[in-house]
Image (cartoon, rainbow, N blue to C red; front, top):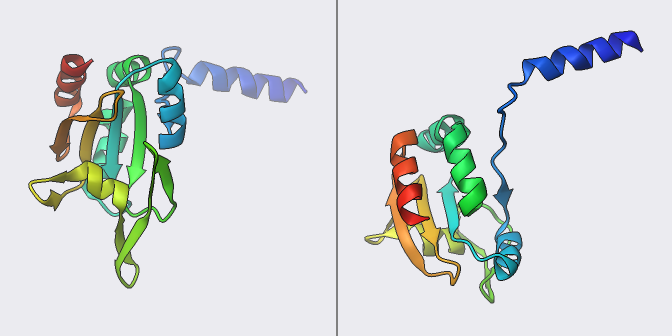
Length: 154
């Protein structure tokens, strides 16, 4: 018993006291929550094979200031553009659309990440609480860039 208590104590000291976790919501959760507490939505559209997406996940979205801004001022949603699950959002059901063997794109990713007739990963899209698109940006965003966008849009 003492051994486990000692391990737990060491583990609790190893985690920084300011450690914060980014709250990620599904579209359905965020839509429901926004009815009681309207806030804009930040949607991060990515794929599993995108290197720039992984870089953002491992750097930008781990920044404590970004985590604080997103958790307090937005509903953050992470959308894998190749997800095959139906998503019910804004009184519509969005589906995965195959484009060949083991390839395709989700309808909602197409709707939220298309800029100048192109879908590029990663994409950040910001929706107002009425679901209107107020911001879209293709490409990797570093800490300073995303903080500037979030500060301006909140």
